[in-house]
Amino acid sequence: MASICLTWQEQWDGYREYKSGAIGSVNLSEFFVTIAEAATFFAVVGRLLQWRIIVGLIAEGVLAAPLAAHICKRLPSRALMILVGVLIIGLSIRTIYLALI
Image (cartoon, rainbow, N blue to C red):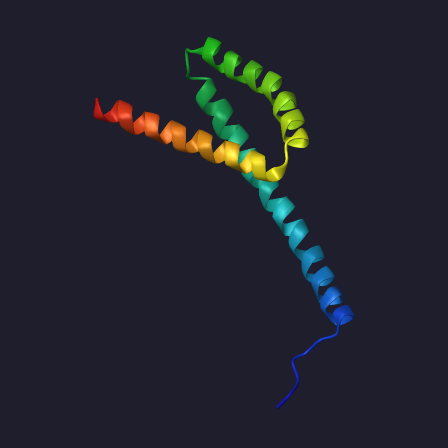
């Protein structure tokens, strides 16, 4: 029976080869997904009449992104995950409650 044990160096070399081939293809596919999303967004936006809502969402995102990045940098991962979980559960409970009344 052939041995399937690899040395640490052989495993690392295999990982680097796999990683280097996978990263380029992932970035390439993300690029095309982003292009498709942007094209869809601009095609739909042209037909919408609620420009104030769209501008508000964009402005809100521009203002919220640096604040969220700062908070994520300062909070420990565990506390951040608990906070996100509580937020999702709270919003889900609210949605269920509003659907039932």
